[in-house]
Image: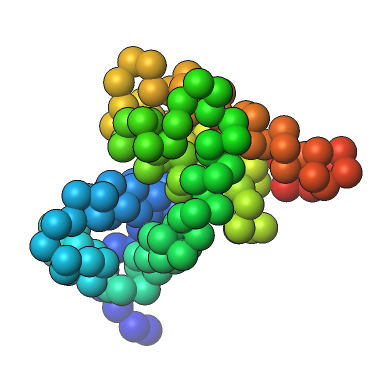
Amino acid sequence: MSKKTNSPRQKYSRHAQRVFAFQILYSLNFDQTGSGLPATFDHFKNDQDTVDQKDLSYALQLVNGVRDNLEELDANIGRHSQNWKVKRIAMVELTIMRLAVYEMICREDIPVKVAINEAIELAKTFGDNNSRNFVNGILDAVAREIRHDQSGTDARS
């Protein structure tokens, strides 16, 4: 009979990986060194407990997905942010919404409601008192557009 051992590796929940992805994306907005994603990812990864790259694979997928689809994500946000130009939205809220809109339109494995709820939790944690309502309002409008585009049915909600 083999003896079970406690591994120092830790599996991170999807929520924890979203937090990690948010932190990386937010920091990349201020990267003036030109070091980019590898250095930023390594910096945050080194601040965590002993981590295996596979344990944070979803976070890396989110970061890369947001970066690869930035123009489309900002266009979606801009269409629904009445009286707010994307460039004028606070970086915390914009980063949260980019992450959520990416999950809503590019990740079929994530229900729209989950993406919105996770964004609201990020806004509660990292934003100010108004962040939650602002993020929720724009994401609800994006979700309505998604449902409309899917002929009135949203199998992911």
